Length: 602
Image (cartoon, rainbow, N blue to C red; front, side, top):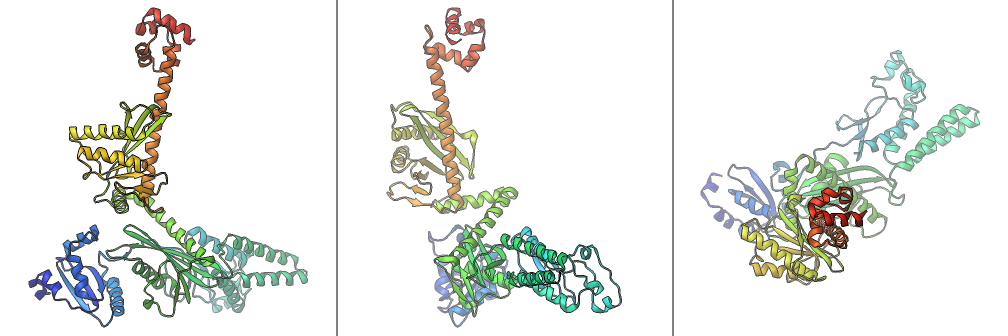
């Protein structure tokens, strides 16, 4: 490192070989901030230090922190992949893909005891116990435990039990035995061999195979019935019904699919979600979603590879021979496994179910993030909107315009303002169209944008980061022409919203740009449009109502527009005018006209 300190970063890059390997970027404290792989080290590393519009903001920030670099040459690109994976796990560099899981999921364990218990746990302890799961929720786990306890008479007590302690009579039966929920191994009513059979039946339930338990219960019920032990037969029948109820509640995908694992990847800005489903005998027996922090140069293949590795090492232990995936991982890291991307049929439906589960986890995480860390949520949302709408800066300040008229009458317009993705209602503005006659939406849009931004420029006020026009290419062209006249077309980006919510138009581009239907930017755009509609329509209705009332007053002899306006300003509504005394009305329009008003509106 001492020699590298004397050599400039540019010289270090120039000295790199054109061979496969891994490179490590370090900051001025000697911390590794990024690990990457390359087929040709020099070409790949040099690309970071070349000015390019393709570089994201995160890449530019990282490059400014690089103080030195190291490299490791390997024999092949595949060796570089394996080495990169190992280095990322051990060093946890800030700008690489990192796991963000901070949640422990519920498991079911069969304890490693002479008379095993089946318990709920959130800790995996390598003590010989068998673990099943994880379960996506505690309610799902409880449903499985309830099914086992109501169908198989296993013990629930925490006594340290062995055949020696049983022979010495150190235990006594508990309430569960008297309720018929325990076979009573503690007092020798159930042999060790018979108890092991019960544990095997419980294991089959945990593996998603209910057939052995159903066969056992049906056989015992029939045997008890033949021997006229009807009370016992009734107990077995009740357990069989409980098993059927559990079967109807469990997620049965298809008996044709058999044993298979499934992984789906959902990328959302700086985070990604890798969902895992385990199927045994056509039933989902485990669900888990790993949350990843997306690093620089992160592609779907690298993200899903890390997600699968994490789940295999910490949860699944071993993958099924066939694994369904939404994106193909680096298969060299998983020997003896066939990865398949299904295009249709039941397996494709299973993959879609996995993706919906990942979306649910994302929605819960975003909700918690917005509640507990609103500033971070706003930063993340603004960066996502900048990227999705192809803007040069984050749209922290957005203004949206909408026109409203009824067959050309009472034309009005509205301007709603959003800051950091949320409405700033105190900055909303109404516009009464003054220079346009009839229903000319294009001319109305030109008028209100000209009035709005001429005033802001004269006052030296802040211009928005983005202007949104509710309308297609025609409305957008009219609005953009105003910005050109005012000389701010290159300072403020503007987009037009088509009738289809995901379609966005840009100036001088005849083709629409389609926003992602699953991303947050589309939700914000929809919210902005809805607010502009609501605010504009409310003002339009109020204006129509006021004009209707004014016209009603003007029909009274001697009451003109001025008198009608003064009456409404004083009493606000016709109802208040009806309730007012003759003297109160006379104070506004005089006694003679007050008498006419009283005669006509009562």
